[in-house]
Length: 324
Image (cartoon, rainbow, N blue to C red; front, side, top):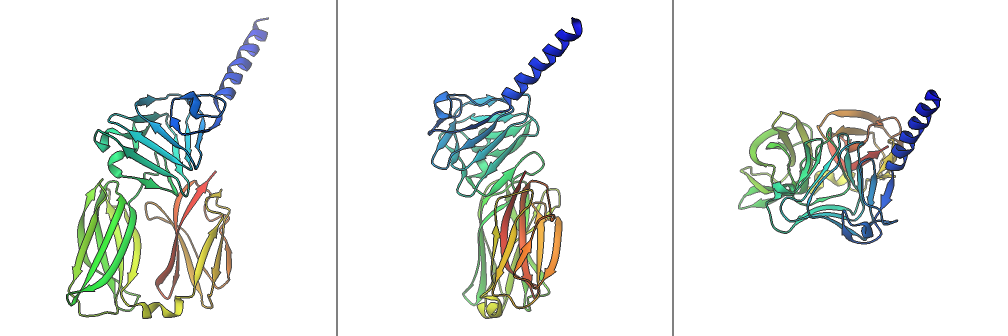
């Protein structure tokens, strides 16, 4: 009889956990804790996978704290933090996935640093980082990196103006501007102090009398991790032979890295390189084909950068999201 009671108790506890691990979806715009916001008139709880529909804005307006099983928030629409002290504190291992077209925003009174998403005490996002648009993925092991909005070069008063702007910065120590004359060897010409954790606009004036340069921008975190961000060519003729090459990655996001790169207009060998958000190279392959299967290149969920290079010049860069 005692063993039977133990078995029934164990089954009962298991059934409770199974019920708690739900998938819930928004049915209309509204508050995060309002039952009317969600299909079935439920409210989010620990263990849930929470999806915000593309046409909905869900608002966090108070300090919300959850404990227990990890949560996952998937944003096709908008998750907005309104008012000072609005926080979403989730259990360890929780994550936020912002899909293409989705956004994470902060509005209303109160400092940006008072509006946060946390997982077991680790800040995944704060309002001071500004609006984050998808695709993006963040958990305790994958903090949001520098999100680059623009990187441009143009002649200005006999010199070259190199400008760039960011949508967000996290623990960003400094930027480096590099210059190449031949597209092969790069020389660091400037180190520009970054804002740290605040988005910004930057400019460096290169006093070079040349219109045949390619510029490269990188950033370095406080911990010394360096990540290449973008390239810009002052002279489009250097890219003439590669101007007709286009690349697409599909599907994106992908499940377990099962995507394919399709390349149009290519007749020469290219190098496909995949790096994670720390700048670590996780895959590299030289190919001459028009399609390349990415299956097996990585199976760890997160955001990756795919760079397609020819003759030491990056001709296409893609953000690739891997889920499980």
